[in-house]
Image (cartoon, rainbow, N blue to C red; front, side, top):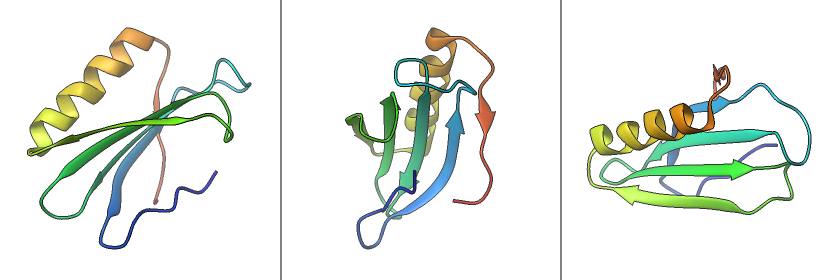
Length: 82
């Protein structure tokens, strides 16, 4: 599913856990507007709700992403151009 970002925001990186299905699929996005960093995550298919959290630094946002991927386990794949 294509993520539409608000004006001024761009997706920096995105990941997928490699699983298909309503319950097993997970995706994570890292985006920024140049000042704020946002982590968004979704469990399930394109109809599932997206959770998000904003950070003042890229380092804090990436730390949360690392923790989320470790907690979920599996083999996460970094996806290509957003």
